[in-house]
Amino acid sequence: KNQTLGDSIQLLPDHIANQIAAGEVIQRPASAVKELLENSVDAGATEIRLIVADAGKSLIQVADNGKGMSETDARLCFERHATSKISQIDDLFHIQTMGFRGEALASVAAVAQVDLKTRRAADEAGTHIEIENSMVVLQEPCAMAQGTSIAMKNLFFNIPARRNFLKSNAAEMRHIIDEFIRVAMAFPQLFFSLSHNGQNVFHLDKGSLKQRIVQVLGNQYNAKLVPVQEQTDYLNIQGFIGKPEAAKKTRGDQFFFVNNRFIRSAYLHHAVMQAFQDLIPADAFPTYVLFIDLQPDQIDVNVHPTKQEIKFEDEKIVYAFVQAAVKHALAQFSIMPSLEFDI
Ligand code: ADP
Ligand code: MG
Image 1 (tube, helix red, strand yellow):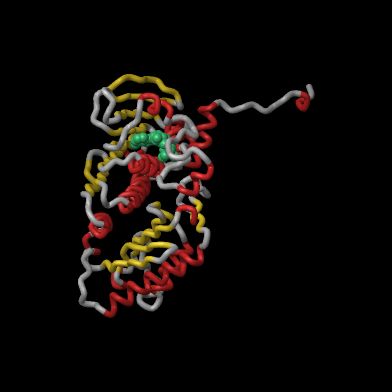
Image 2: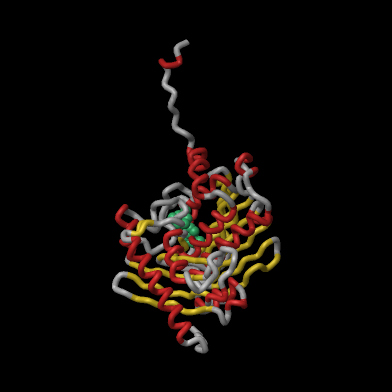
């Protein structure tokens, strides 16, 4: 039999295609946590509660008091490329929301059992939906307050090979806390809580950025933060750096946010390191929480599925401003060492 005579391409069924696509978006429990928290922020929630069990391996639940979804949207949100946030390609360069790819919930629905409850303020009843293998297995009206609660259970239950790749609970929990902190730090005006196996881990009351940093990184930072503030026509930089004495031998307390989105950038990290150069030991890392805001058309956030890497239209300018802003803050701090900053 000549194999070359037959056609061999077949279209993958949706749930398989979704499982494959999910691999990019949901690598571990922490990636799901990030996506769910960002959806709650985008929904205008002021209170966001994260509940996990077994480091997210058996349960990840996010409950918010945001605007909620209609019955139809509650089904539609699990479709791939289903989003209320953009409608044309040009919108990508004017992004005001954390999400826009319309992939997160479709991915979640492909790799976990999902239980969604949602209600808009004006609706008489809410909608309760359960999903397994990307299919709706239950839909019924439910009573609830305005907002949305999404629970994903038994992550990768249907992809055992993937589940085997998960690390120890301690390691996965560390990743979850990292993602939680990044979102909580970017929105100090919102309430966040995190509980793990029924134990409270974080309970973050609304407050200023400085209060949020201290809540999250620890009380030892209370008297060790120096404000950074620099504004030009091109960008605005604000936030806090740790005094040189607060520098640590371990990494971890370094945060860049661009238009309120946490990003990784070895390049911008270098700008801060340069500014601290002669003030800290060569093997120490300065603490910083810096928010860079610029016109959305000056960045491209659509270069990576998790959006943690972005492209700047002009990276060199941003580098120069970050370095200048940090140097400026350090200079003010050392000229006026006795001044107590309270912002
Ligand atoms: P994206 O955030 O990129 O739009 P998602 O898959 O994360 O894609 O979500 C799909 C859609 O579901 C969102 O655009 C939004 O309309 C809706 N949605 C998701 N989470 C919530 C929530 N917590 N509250 C209200 N609507 C939500
Ligand atoms: Mg989203």
